[in-house]
Structure formats: structure tokens, C-alpha cells
Image (cartoon, rainbow, N blue to C red; front, top):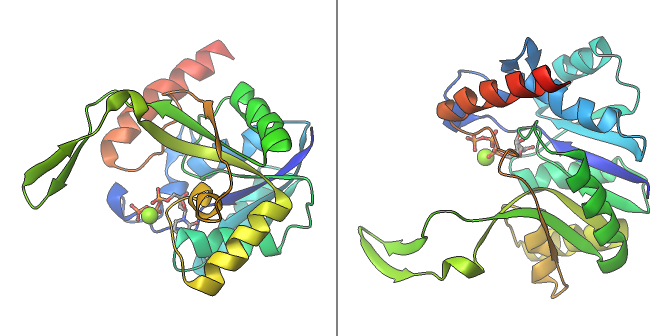
Length: 228
Ligand code: CTP
Ligand code: MG
């Protein structure tokens, strides 16, 4: 099944402490965002790629996409929060089939997970990649534990998240109207009262967030390079 993808890359990367947007840090000589976009450029089922860049970096991002000879990509400006960036991306996408949203900062997503997400979203409306949590998770207020959550019910949610286009558009429009904000797109669908299906993803699909993630990312990208 065909789909299009929105790639939010308009953040600041503050927790990475690199002095610039983490999207432009390099792995194997290429920017993280280039690695991420290439996964979709190469997937024959992917029709269009909308990369959302922050307003000051749109020109830089376009240059980078052209340099890599990506043919499916358009670049558009993002907003204050991730949710604003995705909504902007949606506006420049005509897709009426399946839309994926995938963080620019996750360069290691695997093709089989993408395939499964697209299929599940086609059947059920919304599907998200997630992995079982390995740590025990506790809820804390101040410096003391309030409760210990049941680990076997807990999943760490990633992107890609896949949606029927009409559902994603409705969720974003209604959330904007109501002033409801969330850190991922699936939360908006849940807020509408609609079902979101879990697709078991991979622990390799890291969101590169803090400096130590880059050490692991180097190892994963070297391993992938060797196995190519
Ligand atoms: N993002 C975006 N627009 C924003 C904020 C975030 O497009 N206004 C994107 C980021 O570029 C990233 C993804 O959403 O690809 C996930 O966000 P996160 O990992 O939090 O990245 P940053 O916001 O850049 O990092 P930080 O929170 O550490 O500043
Ligand atoms: Mg952020």
C-alpha cells in the first residue's frame, strides 16, 4: 500500500547540547536527517516526503535535500511545538490515503516496521511503533514515589506513526481548535476516542536525543554499513 510521510525536523535539539539542531549532526559522514529521509526515498511505496524544518533552516534543508538528489521531498517551515510542525506539514500534503509521521531524529527505523504500520493503519485507522519497556517505571511527585506501574502493560512509543489521512487531519484540526496539545500524534487520535494499534518495533529505532545517544548511534550505523 502506498503512503506519504511527514518528517518533523524543526526542533532545536536542546538536550543534545551540540550548539545546533541535532538533525545536522553527522553519522558516517552524512547528516542524521539525510539518513532518515533516504529510508523513505528508497521505499517504492512512499509517494511524497514532507520535511518540516524550522523557519531559519528551510533554505539549508532544501540545499541538503537537493545535494542528496532526493526526488520525493518538499521542505516546509515548522512551528513552535512539534504538533504545530506536523500540522504545517499536513497542509502541504495532498495525500488522501495513508500518512506516516516520523521524527527526523530517528534514522534507524526498519523497513518491515514501516510496511506493517502502513498495513495496520489501512485496516484500523491508526498504528504506532512501540517497544516493551525494559525498566520498571514509577510515578514520582517531588522526590518520592507515588506508585509503581505494571511493567507488562507499558510500552515505549516511537515513530513512525501511521494514520488514515482523513483521521489525522480531523485530529489535528480539532486539537488546534480546542487548544489540546500532546507530544505525539497518536495522542490526538486517542483524545478523539479512536483506536490506536501497537506494532512491535525495534530497540534500534532510537530517537537521538542526548549526547550519549550519539555513541550508540555510531555503533548502529557502523554495523548497518558493514551489513549493506
Ligand atoms: N520537532 C519539530 N518542531 C518542533 C519541535 C520538534 O519538528 N517545534 C521535531 C524535532 O526536530 C525532532 C522531533 O520533532 O525530529 C522529536 O522532537 P525532539 O526529539 O524533542 O527534538 P527537539 O525538540 O529538536 O529536541 P529538544 O526537545 O531536546 O530541544
Ligand atoms: Mg523537543
